[in-house]
Amino acid sequence: MTRTDYSWLLPSEMIYPRDPEPAGDHDRDPGPDRAPGRYGAARVRPRRTVRDWIVDTFMTLLAAGIGLLTLQSIQQTDNSDPVLFLDIAGTVLACCGLWLRRRRPVELALVLAVLSMVAPAAGGASVVALFCVAVHRPLRPVLIVGVVSLLTGIGQAYLRPDPNSSVPTTVIATLAVILLSVGWGMLVRARRQLVAALRERAVRAEAEAALRAEQAQRLAREEIAREMHDVLAHRLTLLSVHAGALEFRPDAPAPEVARAAGVIRDSAHEALQDLRMIIGVLRAPGDEGDRPQPTLATLDALVDEVGQAGMDVALDSLVDDPSAVPAALGRTAYRVAQEGLTNARKHAPGSRATVEVGGGPGEGLTIEVRNTPPPGEVPKVPGSGQGLIGLTERAALAGGRFEHGPTGDGGFAVRAWLPWSP
Image (cartoon, rainbow, N blue to C red; front, side, top):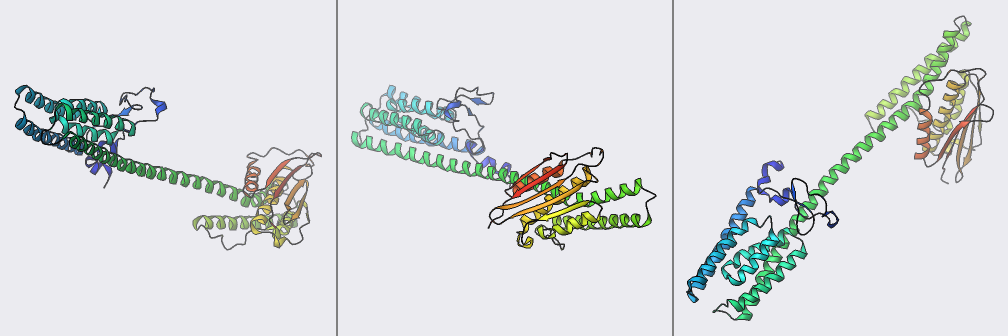
């Protein structure tokens, strides 16, 4: 069932809270739907629900019933027509004034407290007004109205004493009624505040869950884009280099053409395998696929593959046992070397590249890829720089650092330091 189906059963304050705003905002413009309040800032004036109309009618009838009982008691002890007329008029005005208790509860309660001092029949309406103040207002105005009600009750005990009870008994009864009304009203207020807090917490939890889901989707998209670039860029670069060689050298010897075609075929096959692996991981999270993930131990195979593709590359590894490097750390180092060699082939074809790896547990793992300047002028490759951004993010996620830039001899170098726990 939605809130619209049962909202008529709720108090209007539960649907449109009207508690005061922070004290520092009371000078703000209330706006068309708000009215300035005496205790605090602007409050929303909610419309009465069906439940509110029922409660207000019941409270008015209750106050009128108490007033009639009081009038009967007064009529038995005092038959003065002016006094009786004053009590009847005061009771009628007090009961009619209860319809303003939601809009001006504090002012109404103070007026009825003073009126009940001279017209005891209005005491029922005064108690209802005090209860309303305790429900709708914070502690300070409740205490003020409660003290005023107690003082007027004491004054009534002397101005219009009850012949059936003594003054101390009347004062004690007045104090008990005031405490009961205030306690009951504050209990209702606390319950409403608890429900409002739980509702706000639920709304905030839903918003936070939606935000976390959106952030998770964004991080997943970034991870997918980074993995797609790192995995496929290397293969597609080989395809591009050898396809370009075949295009610009159609008269190349048959063995060279066959070798280039074989590299293109193998690279396309590997690219399709990598693409299937990534798609499989996306379809079944937590499953890394059947193909083994690259590590530092497979760096030799990467260098050999690049060398067979026609690039002059050398590997200088100072790590004693590459297989002992943690898998996540080795995978990140592998991606750095792969991206560095891919960039060297794209932006400096014909250059010589060097891959240096060093470090150990406790001091971290350092990997650097340098290439010499290209032998001739190389046209600018569109869409460059995304791989370096991805490597920067990878290194940051691993808790390391990533640097890149031109070298003094006109070449280019990428260097990463990754933490390696002992």
